[in-house]
Image 1: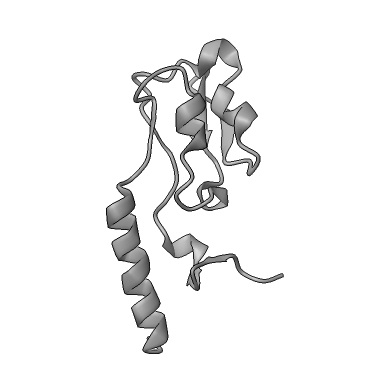
Image 2: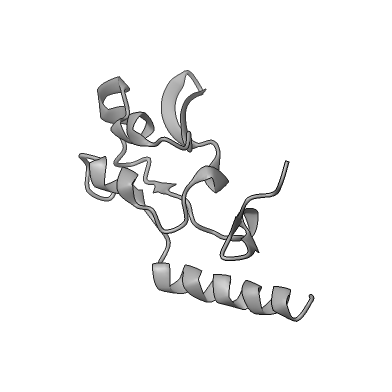
Length: 102
């Protein structure tokens, strides 16, 4: 099985995946819209100390630069993403390193 890449860079080197603000996320009353919406199975509901919470279980399944789950979330700021500009810089730096054979 081949390793997933984005723009020639191994996907697991690209820091693009949703971040959860646990002070805001309420699991949409028990059926998280983001988990239901995401076709790439990024999210899971886990239990910690007897309480359910949303977790980013498979961060590198997230499609680079996709923010659709953030858009379907009814609570502003519960899901956020890193800066696209900063992640683009990381990708470009990694591509250059790969090109130079590092």
